[in-house]
Image 1 (cartoon, rainbow, N blue to C red):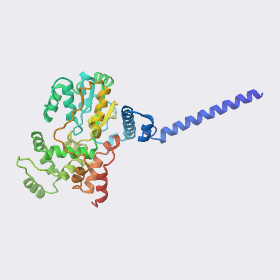
Image 2: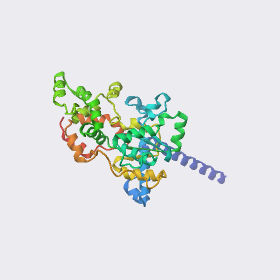
Image 3: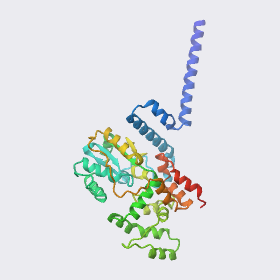
Image 4: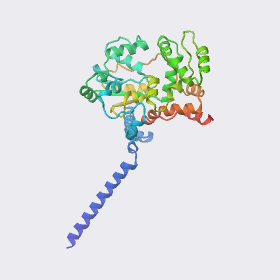
Length: 364
């Protein structure tokens, strides 16, 4: 009799223990964010990693887990954003969704190109890697984009079943940048620098911006006269540019008219909630990230990310950010943040300290 009693008690205790574990797991899944258990801080990296490669891989793991968690959080709100945050492949929208992903067959790479995040340098490297150009230094900025477009197919050009196979078989990656710095870089490069491509850009966009931001016909007439450059294009202030980009909320039609690849949100270029990228690089650590990505993909050590750039703007420097963003009102800074809010959340960017201080100090 006592034996059966002992057996019965053991069974009950085992069942209770299993139930407790199950309940704890379910509560953890509901209450604790996905990345909370996997995020690795500096001290933990020192304990678990003894070399740069290990620390870099842990950082990549952290970035990807945080992205997946953010994608899950925004899934129910996807219809409230423009451009839309894509979760399911739609053949009708294939060109829009996959047209920025360049396929490099020679090295089995797929790179999602985001302007103002080292995209020119990457295309120069791909042209060199594919033996299309003998020298990265010899390829101009506009030339690198034109030649890459002629020689590399985008994933959108493949039938859906082939695109899926390539995504599964090739190394996939993209690079992101602090949205405040990226927007400023676009302004400096396209509206302040003076080279042939920027002149073409100003001719297309400057009058649109002046007309959109002018509060009255009288002010518009004055700006069209006084902001005229010697080359016939118009000078655009950073405040005017920021308002042009960020105003309009989620009005899809209005934003589409004012959108351009140099300043539309980064998530819209690469759709990271749809595509499970192997690597996520950051502009601030571009050479380190590029070196590890190329090495992981088996690219020859002789082919490395370029150590030069054309038309540098210095837009990531705190002093440069301060100089330009101090010309914006508090509400304009807030509108810029709201416009790029998904980029901040998906890629875990913090507002730069200098921007936070500016915002706190401004009354309007």
